[in-house]
Length: 431
Image (cartoon, rainbow, N blue to C red):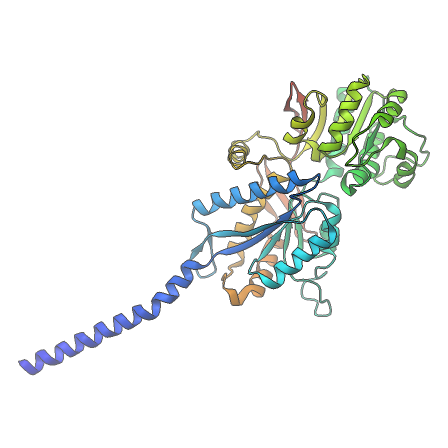
C-alpha cells in the first residue's frame, strides 16, 4: 500500500512539475503575444503656412485608431488580436528632402508596416520617386515601404510606384461636375476670371490645368488676360495661362493683394476663382471685400473647404462655393467630426481621409494575416501592400470609396458646400 502510494505520489509530482515547467515556458510567449502591436508612422506639415493640415490629419488618425483599439484592435494572422499603434507623427514641413528622409528613417529604423503621409503634392511626388517602382523587381533598389496618403491631391501621383496609395478625391471629376451644375443653376453668369498662389503646386497646377479648363468646357468665358491657346481639355493652354495671368496671381505668404484684386475688378467677371489655400485665399478675399468687388459667384480650391477658412475670413468668404469630399452629412461623419473636434482638430476632405485610412489599415492588416513580430517586418510590409492593393472598396465617412489596385488611386463621393451665414452648408449632393 505504501509502495503504491509512493508511486502514485511520484506520478503526481512529475505531472505537476511538467505543468509548472510548461507554464513557465509559456509565460514569456504569452507576454510576447500580448505586447505585440501593428505599428504605423505618420508625417505631414506641422509647421509653416500649411501646418493645420498636418495637425488635423494627426488628430484624425490618432482618434480613429483609438476607436479601433477600443473596439478590440485588429486580428493578426495567428488569430490573436493586437492594437494599432501610431509610434510617431513627424513634421515634414512640406519639404521634399525632409519627407524623403523621414521615409528612409521609418523604413530602416522602425517596425512600422505602413507610412501615412504626407501633406504637399510636391513632397509626395519626390517621396514616391524613391520607392521601388514595381513590386518584386530585383533590379530596382528603391525603398520597399507601403505609403498611404491622405492629403497630397495632385492627379496621378500614385502611379509613380506600386508601393504608393492615396485616399484623395479626383479633382478633375469634381470641378467638371461642379461647373456643369453651376452652368445649369446660374444662366445669368457668363464670364469668369481669378487668381491662384504660384508657389504651391496643388493650387497653381489645379487652377491652370483643371479648374479654368472645366469652366471653359461648360460655357463660361474667360475674361482675364488673353490666352488664345486656352481650351476645354485638361491642361489645354496651361503654360500660356500661367505666363499671361501671372500679374493677378500671388504667393502663399503674401500680405498685400491690392494689385491682383484691382486687375480682376477691372475685368468685371461674373464669377471669380480663388484657387488658393486658406491663408492666402483669406488675404485675397478680404482685399476684394475692401475694394467692393462683388461677383455673382465665388469658387474656391478644395483645400479651402475647411474651418480654417472660416476662422480666417468668415465674412469675406461669404458665398464661396467649393467641391469637397467631406461634410458631416452621415451619422458616421457627424460622430467622427465630434470626436476629432474633442481631440483638438477638425475634419475636412484631407483629415477625413486620414480617419478613413486608419480603417483601411485595419482591413488590409486583417486581410494580409500579418504576424507583427520584429523579425518579420519586411514580410509583413509586403503582405500588407499586397492586401491593400487588392481592396477595391471601403467605407468612407460620406459613402463608399472605390479603389483601383492597379494605380493606387481612389474614387470618392463628394458634395458642394458654400459659406452661408458664416457656416459651410451643403448646397448640392451629386452622390
